Amino acid sequence: MGQDTRYIVTNLEGGRGKHLYEKLYSARGQAENHIKAWKAHLAANRTSCSKANANQMRLMLHGCAYWVWWKLRAACPKRSPWRRAQFDTLRLHLVKLAATIVEKKTRIIVTLPASCPRKGLLLLLFDALAPPKTA
Image (tube, rainbow, N blue to C red; front, side, top):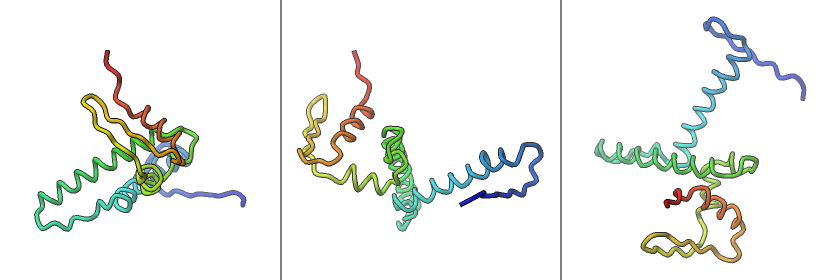
C-alpha cells in the first residue's frame, strides 16, 4: 500500500537498475515458474522407471504435453483469465468434460453437451487450433 522499493546487487556493467530488474531478474523468476508448472501440473519430476531410456522417454512426453498446454493457453483470448490460468486449471475446466467424439475419414467431430458451461470458449479454441484449410 505504497511505494515498493526493489534493490538489485550485481556485477554487470552498464544498464540501469530498472532495466536489469525487469528484463533479467524478473525473466529468471518467470523461467522458474515454467519449471514449477512443468513439475507440479504435469508430474514431470516422476522418473521412477528403472531404465534411463524409459525415464528419458517420459521426460520427452512431458515436454510435449507442456507445449500442448502452452499452445492451448496462448490460443485463449488475450484479455480472458484463461490466458494466465495454470495448466491444472485448464485441464479441470476445459479438458475434463463429457463429449462425443466421432472419427471420420478426413475429420474428427466433437459434440459437446448442450449444458456445457464453457462451450463458447471451447468452440473458439477449436477454431484457433484447427489446422489450416487446404485448397
